Amino acid sequence: MSAVSPLAVPPDSLFGVRNLPYGVFSTADDPRRRLGVAYGDHVLDAGRAAEATGAPTDLAAVLSAPGLGPLLAAGRPAWTRVRAALTEWLTAERYRAAVEPCLVPRSRTVPHLPFDVADYVDFYASEHHASNVGRIFRPGAEPLTPNWKHLPIGYHGRAGTVVVSGTPVVRPSGQRKAPADPAPDFGPSRRLDIEAEVGFVVGTPSPLGARVALADADAHVFGVCLVNDWSARDLQAWEYVPLGPFLGKSFATSVSPWVVPMDALAHARTDPPARGAEPLPYLDDRAAEPPYGLDLALEVRLNGHLVSRPPFSTMYWTYAQMLAHMTVNGASLRTGDLYASGTVSGPAPDTRGSLIELTWNGEEPLTLPDGTTRSFLEDGDEVTISATAPSLDGTRISLGEVTGRIEPAR
Image (cartoon, rainbow, N blue to C red):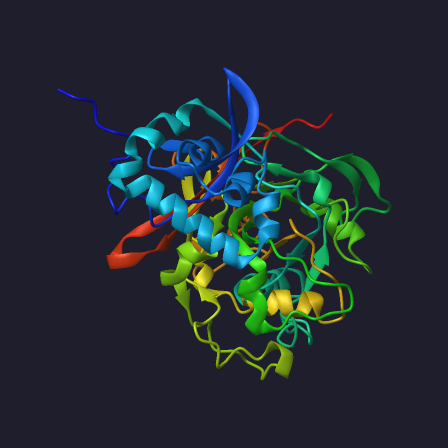
């Protein structure tokens, strides 16, 4: 009996031809970093496949690079052309003999950061998350700040500490001061948290002084990844007034190894929720077609136990609005910019995307199926965030997962 070809991937596979996410990998026997495309249980060595199929020189050049940078910079026409070529190589019988040797079992690959992060911006786009946090810290007061429904609030993070899934996360140290303490002290964070987020990867840059309109978002945004914006809540609480997040966020931000192209999410586009305030013209997406909302289903696991299912479809601000606001003052985009949604949380308690919400600031600890409890993360804890999106004919595709394990402070 002949072996089943690794190209024999069913249409409803989470990593089938309707997905084709990009990443960077190496193997134990070949440490070179190569651009890869997840397909079934394998990874297509994209550069090798381009050579084997006799691809045009320009297409082969971007696929033979050791990272996504050249493809990101090539722009949307190139993104569409490359995706069409990959689809043909993986499905057309005439390419089978050339492409099969280019597939590496995913279990044998080592993932790397798929692109060089140019700048990193983190938003605060979930009304449910912002309202929960407001109720926790301002009980009895209006949970949302007056500006929240008028602009996507965000902060500039630290690009150099964005790490790929699987990278250990060392517990950060810094200044801490509880409300009853007479003075701050220094030490490891006691309130280490997660934030389940979706990240957007910028390909095409924009010039300094120019704005990116809502309608141009898809010409600049290449694809999406999953993000865990680890947060030291005690460090953050003491430092954030008046300038916002700093050391409580900058120690590590984990991203999934696969970047799912926006073209793969065509069937995930959905209308965003009703807004409570009329947006200013540059943020007015009410007539957008297709809409800029995304129907992504996230899952959060702590030490293997499912603790939350955050729905991205409930996000108040869309990726196009975030990009438009990020550039409305003339700030330029660079190839490899990453901007994240902020914590994804839904209306129900089991759809909250952070421990500060799930445990209501530690007052209501989680009881896990193994009998242990958590208010915030302990050393040795492992968090995994995964997500899927709807595809053609009722099938779904995967955005992969982002995982991190907490190591003791150093």
